[in-house]
Length: 248
Length: 75
Image (cartoon, rainbow over all chains, first blue to last red; front, side, top):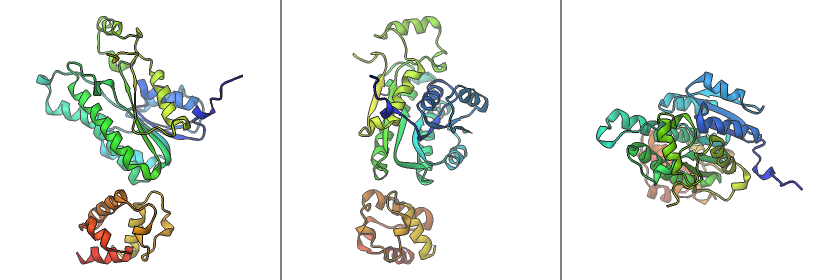
């Protein structure tokens, strides 16, 4: 007897994925398409989005380029998408710097990409009435929001802010019966961690109880859960996916 | 802003109540969806689109959308 997976199906759902050109965003676009979703893929680089699209299961998908630090791009994106059943806000950056070295430009770049961009996109989608009844909104946060590490201050601050933004949004979209949740990964095998040497990565990896970092698709599976009807009673939550890294 | 435009803008702040249900005579505080969240949306709509300030008390003191429109216009 096979298990009934229909409850996790995204058949007939239209989902916007930001940051779809690489890493978790790319895996999310691909895995959501395999579950039957029609996907709007967004990121800055059209060629890389086309690469993602070429790896997706067939469907009514659409590429819209947008820079999450550019308000006009964000508004244009909100105008161009159709009414959405799901929004996966995955575009983000991490650039490590100890606090005594940070400057204005660094701080505002981190906050605008990781916090203001997604916030303004949600605002524009609400204003344009592009969020369907019972829609699901997922923010990509990080264990950094509660698990500090040296040189990660602005990233951690931006992700902690995202968590709280998501909770307030969860309250404000209740009239739509829409849901808002966060996912908090630790290290994931993406370009974001490739700035470290392999030696450093091996050392960090050895501290992970499950002995490895997550693969991007393992984060995408959680997005699928939040997008699916399986999570209809779940809002205002955050799911840690870190191979046990923050157990202690 | 005309009364008609005001009714449309007022209706647009609601997520669940169909726009057709709004007329100048609508007693907005009796709508199922009426509540503090929509009230804040209306206050901000009036600020953005008419550059006028209404308060929570104003919203409680008016009955119909038309009442509110005249109150805003008088400010």
